[in-house]
Image 1 (tube, rainbow, N blue to C red):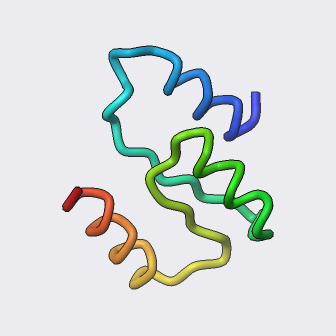
Image 2: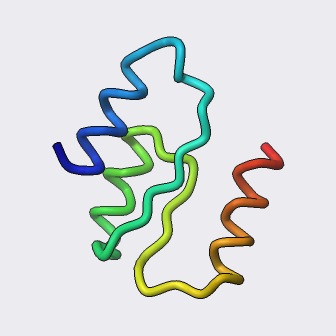
Length: 64
C-alpha cells in the first residue's frame, strides 16, 4: 500500500474523517498534489524540506 492508498483507506472510515493528515513525499508535481488533496490530505510536504516548513504545515493543520 502506498501513501495515497493509505489516505483513501483512512478517509473511508468515518472514525477518522476529521483526523489531520499531512502527506510527506518526493512527488511534488501539480497532478500528484491535486490527487492527494482530493483523497483527503490536509496538507502536503515535498522532500527535502526544512524544519521550518514542517512547523508551518503542522501549525496550519492544527489551527483548523
